[in-house]
Length: 330
Image (cartoon, rainbow, N blue to C red; front, side, top):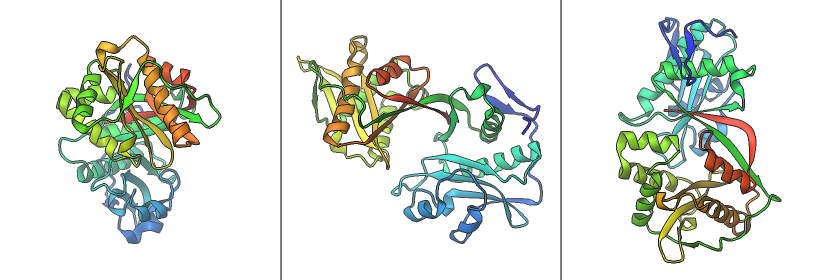
């Protein structure tokens, strides 16, 4: 489709929409009910298998917003969370029917869907969490207009583009880093881990950490990040702190699973030990632990495009760029 002239992109690729038309009177936006499964599945695109995810609780009727015209589905937004979650964690789904061809109407319907879900599912003061998978180099590719349109719908509902992230993958048969000969990895209790995470967040190149610290503070961000990691299916017992020979903490590494694959959950190096290549020891330990001790077939990971030291560490550890990127909005 042609991107409407009201959609503009700044130097930071942050779309904005001005003078959006009102939602057409014939279109109604509402949450789905369990009786709407067939209807909610009647247009293509993400999300994955609604019958399965509604059944396992990772997507739910009340986390699914529908835009209807004369009882026909013209748009859909779906949120996702762990089966144990009281509220969803993120949305990755905003689809419009091919029958909606007018660009301004598409923006109006998509924005209304996003806004309805944000209002009902995101507590006041909390970040919206939105992810959008795109091909690497998307800005100059044929998918750019559709991606910018979707970003405009989310930003029109109050979100903003925060960061672009690499999608990385290690598969069985790739090199396994040897055990570190200069760090000792030991279990870590909650208080010590929160302190380590807070210290590693000082000067962090991770956009999510920097954004949340600016909004909620150093310790609150560390506690949030640890609690967020607890939600993953990987056992808490896998987590380790890393210590230098003299017993001084150097960092932490949190291997986990994401529900399907083993994953590099989170790792960090304290500021006073940066510049000595310890990130390679930490990532190597995570990879070795998952590959050897947990017999992982695949290990998934991601990092900000702009976090060059971390991207370099992943490449050195044998992780390949999958060729797709993730746009994160909050």
